[in-house]
Picture 1 (tube, helix red, strand yellow):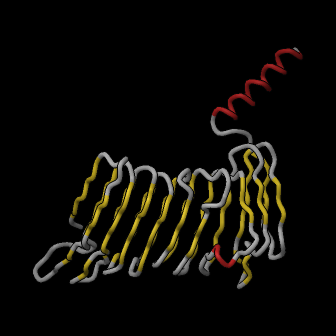
Picture 2 (cartoon, rainbow, N blue to C red; picture 1 turned 30 degrees about the vertical axis):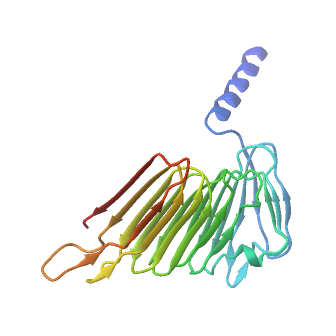
Length: 239
């Protein structure tokens, strides 16, 4: 019947919303200036690199509107938001920024509505986020300075750590650092410093297996709690 069909549609819509909402628009940034406004549903905005041409460029504006929206950026070169003058990103709930290069500089503290920031890169990454944004930073070959300033729950996962530095400053929520040293004999892990956070959990793991004449030295760890810090755990594990 008509009523049964309507009820079936309503049930399907309700089920879709319950598991994450209705799929919205698919927006692909170009090498020109893009001014995108999403739908009321779950939109996806995508920026990439075509040969040497990046599609996330100066003056681009992204407004996700309602829904649970996603912004994905993938580049072989570094991502540096300080060079992207005039960009606007708002009402996008999740952003994933991936670079195959070093020295990423990413500041999303002025992005309205961002719940989760995922950053994937290589060596020497600098990330700044609002206190309402969860940050997940992943790095490889982590020699150099990696830092996260701000953020809510902050998780840093790095491999290949070798006498660099890793810092998390002024996180509003939980801080987790998982650092695995490089596999070379005689490696010293990254020096790890944190300030703030409600809880702090730091794990350093040796990148090489123990054996005769094989050494790995854990990096120095310094934890400075704040008024909201209730627990600190620091541990070392073997390969």
